[in-house]
Amino acid sequence: MAGPMLAHEGLQVWRPPDLGNLEVHCGRSSRKYWPRHLDETFEIVAIRGGVGGMHYRGTRHTASAAFLTVIQPGEVHSGGALGEAAFSFVGLHADPALLRDAAAEVAKRENGAPFFPSPVVRDECLNALVLDLVRSTEGSAPRLEQESLLLSLLAQLVLRHAGDGAALRPLGRERGSVRRAREYLEDRYAENVSLEHLASVSNLSAFHLCRVFREEVGLPPHAYQIQVRVWRAKALLTKGLPAERAAIEAGFFDPSHFTRHFKKLVGVTPGLYAEALRRK
Image (cartoon, rainbow, N blue to C red; front, side, top):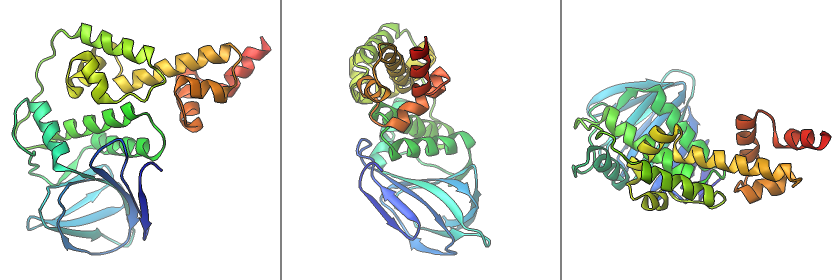
């Protein structure tokens, strides 16, 4: 598990070291009542199973699988499980500055922290994105992947559910910027590149780079980085390197992460691929 972690009564809490002021809460609860409290952070919770209830802004709300709850900093709320079954969840406690930066980037204006008029939204895509982000922080996923998922989550949350009518600016001609980013990832495939540094190489903001890169290449930067690393690993396996060494030299430091992505892109595990090469 990446970052400092605490576990208590079925709740795990950790702070991903590459994601700044973000705290992850993951657990399952059958408690019927959590006392009234407030937080200094935005609380973004993806419900994984069961049904949870929440009292917020004078109204009782319920949320189940595929729903997302968003609590503003400094607003009192309470909640608990509804019915006999426990509910499972993944929660993100995000510093207001993270949401403020995302809103400024999306809307291209300084509006302060975004306001979310509805604390409960049904959004399967964002729910899944929260789970993808949390899974990336549990292992040794590349920094670029974790940062890109977080930025995408916060930007889409602001675009879809904030109350200030944020809208994306039109895409322009940024092929040169995308080319520079691609070349950087290809030349430094084994480095733990940060999104901020890649954005500075391309001379674009992080959010705009992710948008135009996906538009131009068909993949976001972190997925392209994985693709390049798999290409490199294949070349090393072809030269006869053991799978473990090929993984490390290609930039994969978690064997399960390497195997999962290699099989996804190549169709077989690295071991089977190497075995097939030896039989030729």
